[in-house]
Image: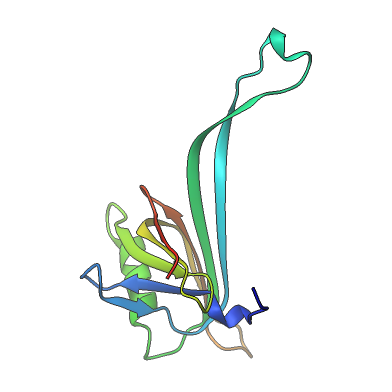
Length: 139
């Protein structure tokens, strides 16, 4: 696989229809962090070596950028989900590369901020954590 620019890692969110994804505008840093939660299943028969059992997969997306007013449809979807009571899920898709590899599913907004510095553009950051299974697609 050839090297690709980080601009290919993009987050899209749905504004209603599961197939109607909108790019979260102004993205500067988008990070995909898959992980596995393990359970220690070490017993006395392991000769002093630890043993782990993978029990739970999870995925976290961290997204930061410059608020691109008024083109904030994607950011608005995330903000509305966070502000609803109780917080609503976001249907989202994280695209990993030019080939279009992606994960799609429901995400919970676990952190959300908007920052306005005196001599800087308005910035946002948020974190999405999967809320159920994520579907992987190679294209």
